[in-house]
Image 1 (tube, rainbow, N blue to C red):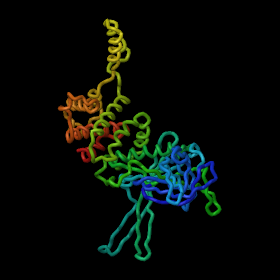
Image 2: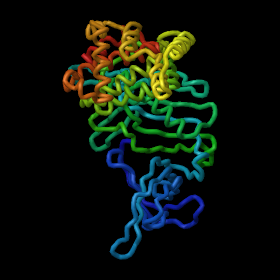
Image 3: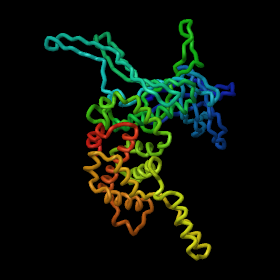
Length: 449
C-alpha cells in the first residue's frame, strides 16, 4: 500500500476480446493512473466510468475497479492515448462483475500497531564487553477478538530474518498483522469498511493518524496451482488512502492516548465495542478522527466539527426530550388554542413550537457530568460558563451573526476551546467502549494539555 510500482501489460473490458497495451502506475502520494495506447471511451463525448478493467501484466492478472475517465489525447504520430484513475487495484485475479468480488479472509498491516502493542519476541544478550552476543527470537502468542457475529479477528506477530552475504549482516524486523476471518464470504467494500473501522481505533488510542500498510485478501473460490497442489490465491489490494501522509510519525510508549498494557486483558471486548459503536455513532467517530489527518493545523472547521460531534453523540446516547413527549404536545396544543392569529402568523408560531430538544449548552453539561475525569476537571472547572461560551461560538461560526462578531473567539482562544471540547468527546467515546478514565487521563494531558 505504501510503496509505489509500475506494471506494463495489456488491458481490456470484461466483455471485450480486444486488448490494449498500457501502463498502470501506483503511488500512494501522487495517485493511481492507467495510461493506454487507445481508449475504452469515445473521445470528447463519452465520460463514462469503467466499473471493471482487466489486465495481463508482468506481475500477473489485475482487476481495476471503478476507473474514472480522465482524458484522451492524440500523440504527434496520431496514436490515441487514454488515461484513467482506478479507485481499487486487485492484483492476482480477474473478476468479471463487481458484485462477485467477495472474500472470506483479509490480512493487513497497520501503521503504528506494533509500536502501540509494545511487545517483542526478541531477546539480545551481550557478553564480554560487546564481543559476544546471543540473539533469541520466539514468536509472540496471537491476540484474538471478534467483530460482530460473522467475523473472528486476531493479531499475529512475525520476525523474519534477512541476510547480506558479502558483509555477513543479519536484520530481524518484527511486525504485527491483523487477520479477519469471515464465516461467510463478504463483498470487498464491506471488508475495506471493517479495515477502516479497526484502523480508526488505533488512530484514536495512539493519537496519530493510522492507515493500512498492506492488504491481502483470499477466499476458497480463488485457487492457484503450487507444486501439484491447489492453494488459495493471495490477492493484494491497493488504493490511495486519503489519510496517508509522510508527516504522520511512529509513536512510542508514553506518547499514546491509551496504553495497550493497561487494557490488554480487556482488549478483545474493547475492540468489539468500538466496532459496534460504529453502528449508530459513525458520524461522531468520523468527525473526531478527521482531526488527525492534519492534527497540528487548526481551522475554524475543526471547532464546528467538534461541537457537531458532541451534539450528535448526546442526541444518540442521551435523553433527547427536555420534557416528556406527551406533555410537550399537550403544551403546544394549549398554546395554539389560546391565540387568535392570521393563518400566516399561526403557521409561523407552529414552526417555533417544534423544538423539544435540549440545546448544546445543556448537552455539554450532561456529557461532562457523566464522563468527567481529572483532565476535564482541571481544564473545564466552570462547566456552566464553558458550555455557554462553546454554544455562543458555535452559533456565531454556524450563522455568522455580525452582531456577535466582537465577542466571538478567534485564533489561539478558539483553538483552546476546541481542545477542551475534544477532550470531552474523546472521553465519551473511550468510556463508552469500556476504557476507564484512569487509563487515558495522562494521555489526554500529554496530547491535549
